[in-house]
Image (spheres, rainbow, N blue to C red):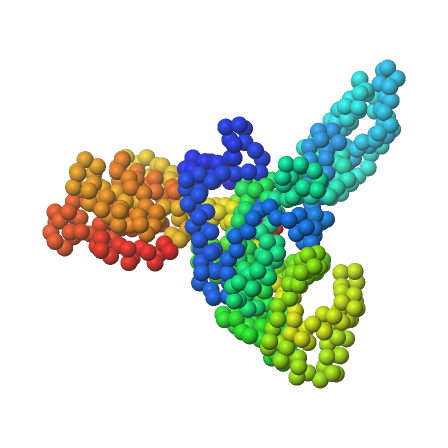
Length: 575
Ligand code: GAP
């Protein structure tokens, strides 16, 4: 990881934000190459998820929205992490991220000092493995000194064994406060008064704007369920412990799709049955009789195919299917796509089947209908007998009652069925939600490799090569004249450079030996290099005239190619 962080700074991929002022924790800037890499990743997502599909449209919403959105979505009340403070250093920890520790805990019920001053606060300290009890007592003394005692004498010492606890500061053993929820949303004030009434939030996810604008998109885009709305944009979370470089940042970018589908009841009414999912199910092309489970699996397979297309094959991905206990109360399923990072296998993207929770919440809180009308559903239910309708109502009632507090009231369930039979419903949603910064980090980390080369004098040198997939590489082609002091070579090279730069990002370089120039491009992951030499100028006859050397980064192989064939050859590889 250290090598990657250092390369990112040295070659201009990622810098610490505000570095000249000492930096700001959890914020990162992308330098020239990082900005290109990120833009390429953004483009690949946009293309795969929207441009190449007929059933997904984009949205570009504001970062600050009406605060009621975050009340409706549940973020105001529940978007928090548990947080604990060290009783001695006051350092803040995310309670569930503190490492598990076992050992002997020293507890004191209070302390007094030579002046007769007493403090009755108690403190516990976990004795670090292999350390003498004095080291724990020293931390205890520190605690009481901070409470105004000079030379505190510890009182009522007791010891106990603990196992696998997260209740102590791993750095000094001091007790941590009980976990308290800490809301992760950054807030600000809109307008000049800056009162509580003007409080607004920086969005912690891009998804909610999609739900809030759902009706406008339906009314203006002529899309019909099933269809999706995608968005790429900044999100902000005041993470308790930002860490692992850009992996957990406080400002980051998300690429989210909300794909709206018909409720399974509608599919059943129209097609008689919902297509069941199985390991061998064909997920290649969406079918009209798919219910939420097939759509969910379909999007998992689409996302895996996307990652493969930019060089992250299944060999570097893993999947965590959330258990019932882990799932949010409204979610039907959620799978985390994990990736091999240098610090472990961690989440890259979550794909959740969220039912109709989000739109229903916004419908309730805004008082505006977010239902769609489905002519086919209306027709299908019109053909149902009274018994069939009563059976569906019964099934829905028992389903909702079983959910307890999270379920609909009987009256709301009856209303839901009534609206459904008339062809109106709130669509359900499948949400593939990916982090752009995490993806950039994964791509850089997985591309990182080192090769050792021996020169003609037998000296060994280690070179870094970033083996980016050509689609995401920040620079696609390095274009070099063999010699910089031959005007005709330079002019021809400029011609080739001008031809290519309209279609892909190229880098013109004439300084240093060709080998050095290759190495510089290898280090930033440029997949192809072109050298224009005397053969290009026709010195060895017409056959080689107007051909250039095309050098491939990963195996160093070289071939001659006609300038006129360059675009046709390179474009399909880099786009
Ligand atoms: N709308 C659903 C949602 O926001 P999430 O799992 O909280 O779900 C989705 O976030 C993705 O956003 C994550 O899989 C991750 O890639 C990215 N992400 C979340 N928090 C992040 C952070 N603090 N820093 C960088 N990326 C983050």
